[in-house]
Length: 464
Image 1: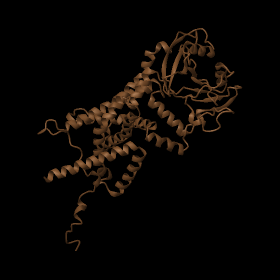
Image 2 (image 1 turned 90 degrees about the horizontal axis):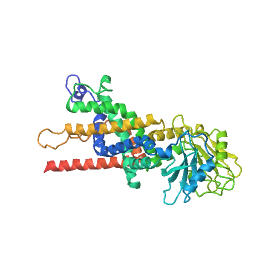
Image 3 (image 1 turned 180 degrees about the vertical axis):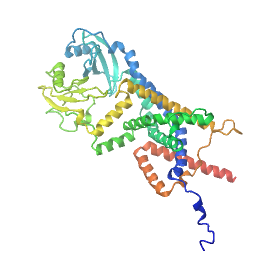
Image 4 (image 1 turned 90 degrees about the vertical axis):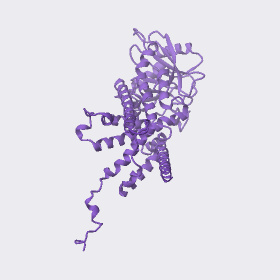
């Protein structure tokens, strides 16, 4: 009977079933569209402010040249005398650290705490190492020693000068950047022949030409954009906490040099490293002796000498974050000058090293000027991708009727076409990622809720 009688069950066999990607593509396209339209303004802001930040390194060298550079002299003066000159110029503060001149023609930077400064700020007093003349003083921020221009642009990039609330903008942008980048990559590679992937096609017009530029440039930029997203999230407010916790669980916590003296804190001091503590009683050691002891331990690149605070000794750290990095540290007892601990960067857990490399690359210091140029190129590329994306949306608008209409998104219900064996794991992964990157999860739920309400409203309007 089954041979002689046509049955409905055999009819669908003539229709090929869509591949997994064929079923997923409408869903990815709709997500890419909504994320691009709604998150793109934040990404554009991040790109503009990031571009300005990338250019700030070279601008600092020009703007603050008087403070940073001096004519090369015959011999350098003792560090103790240089610090004394800084203290005489600014008696209102106390010295917390010293950056000895790292090269010929560079000034020594004496960091002081003075009234009115924030916790992560210091007054950097610049001293001519050959004459002990004070060249000037500027506010310095963070462990990188950012001067006012770079500090302002860094804060503007991170929070738009809106404080803790403003940090949500940059975290939301970083949370979605990798999603948009990977989604765009899948859409572009999934529809193009290999010869048409890497460069825009010639002879195209209209939306197809815009799409060709959008896809080709996006393909070249995708790795850099994903790395910016990942490294940006590492010090974000919410996802950053989850990343730090995961890193600790995997044994990738950044170690610290043991600097507590015998009569100081016995535990927990590692959590206070980097905080400005009250100065300890004067040591009999001179800064030159401390620097010499550090050199004997191999800590001899660009260094920072942190003065003793209550219960802690001298800590000398290398500051050379440019690859190949030099970031060793040594702790020295202020009472007798003995070495208490030595920490080599090579002894860091691999995950801690990679985290450091990623953050420094994001900040533009890992590879120096090439790093900063790469950041600038990525920022310009991201801005161009966003402009092309909006242009494609405009080019898809209806040409009849509404003059100001825009292109419609992919129809709703794309997820229904995804096979359950693919949809269920995808939903689980999405939930886990949304929990781990909270602003991504919350905003995605908001998108889905608004989309569902709009769909419901459309059905109600059709009924009436």
